[in-house]
Length: 230
Length: 75
Image 1 (cartoon, rainbow over the protein chains, first blue to last red):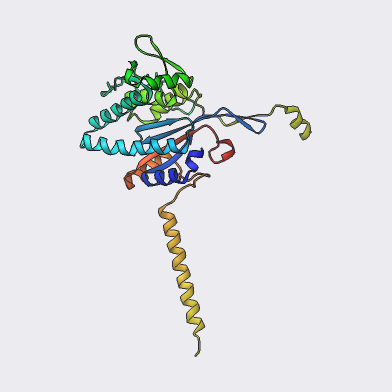
Image 2 (image 1 turned 60 degrees about the vertical axis):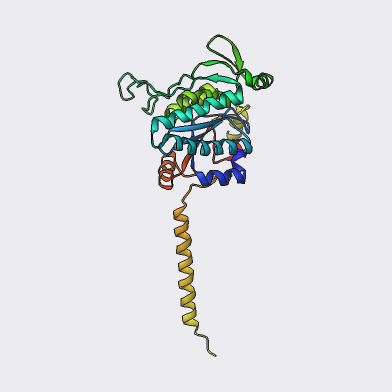
């Protein structure tokens, strides 16, 4: 993570955030090379509800920009909400929808009300991983309404960059990179707890498989090591 | 003029102990599990980060990695 080695990024994060890390997936070591693996950075409220995500490795400038956006948007949302949690959530989700429109040229309707969930995490019918925890759900992103023609250049840039295709609700196909997909997801699921969101980010956006398995070490010529031991 | 070595040694020792105590107290206040080759100070767990953030009125930054974050070669 070169971005986090940058002194300016470190100074800003240390000033406004308390940081920690978790290992959520595995990778292979073939010879001395790492294969696979990824990273996601979550900016959260102190109660673990996610305000923003940076999916995948980014440079120092992008990391700093995203961290500053979180702090500034939190300030604005607190001013607007005046202690009302529902309004704070709606403001943040609208901010994500606005960034999707302005920076990626696509329109989604921010979901400002969460219907009550009927899933019981403690019920006998809930699937669990071997450690007994419920599986991380795959949260559905809100449907894309279509392009915002005033930001047509953003979509053309995304197409030129060969970002993966995504369909809108009318069947039109557009291109959207990782960070655009984050804004799409957060327009509906911002301020959801990190344990409910990380599965969607790691598997649906980054294309990684969540795992708590240890690192798999693959030696291309196992007989060499075996011969050495004999 | 005679130098009171015994008193001087005692004063120096007291000063040294005070500075060591102060340094230890300061280290205790900002207890982190290190920066792992970055410029960011990390605490041990997200739960601890959340508790500290609530106390200091800060936000929480959680990094999810697939790798040995402690080993920069595999991060």
